[in-house]
Image 1 (cartoon, rainbow, N blue to C red):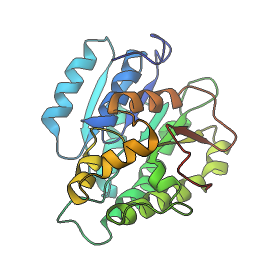
Image 2: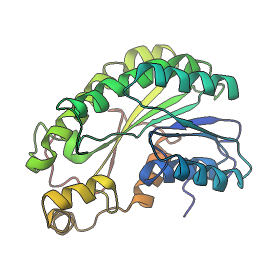
Image 3: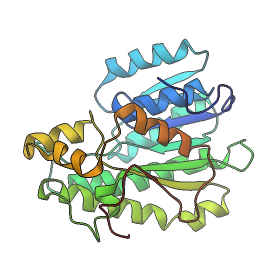
Image 4: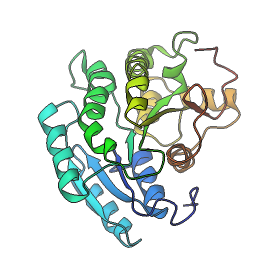
Length: 259
């Protein structure tokens, strides 16, 4: 992996990355740890993967806490935050990466519960820890989404992904409503939006539901980011100056209309 943030930049900080036992979340956690941050790895049901990643990151000389938590369960989230408080006493970076909605066997409203309601609950539960950040300029919250969701109001997406895209945009909108209140507490907020990402679970499920979808999007965009490349952009969003619209667009957006 390349190192988007210089080593030592985040020494003394603590970062929680939701859904970080694999994929974009795991690589984001690794980039933050490479920069010196202590990391909280959150998983729902991939404990072995989470522990393997934790062992790798501890070799970098940072502290790593592994916490299993169902983000749709308020008690589970509250317990995770209590473990973070006991271990680190604060949070400086919160990366809201976990999302879903295409999994089989879930309730009809699962996408909205996870991609909107759970995101708000995690933010609310983390806010006391974020307010205790000792980073100059305050803590930062990073919400990870896709162009297909971010631009869903003006650019239709494939039918198989529409419900998820709408739920993620609902989550983004609800989180954006918190920006003034977060700012009053000294907490920054930024949205990172990317095109389809090669190698993600979502891309795999979309390809299964709509064969050829990834190749078609790749041809239209010219190229698609892979997991590691996109995770590097998410990690950078935790430290770089925030644009006036609180948005970091990654990859081609020429196929998408305005928000």
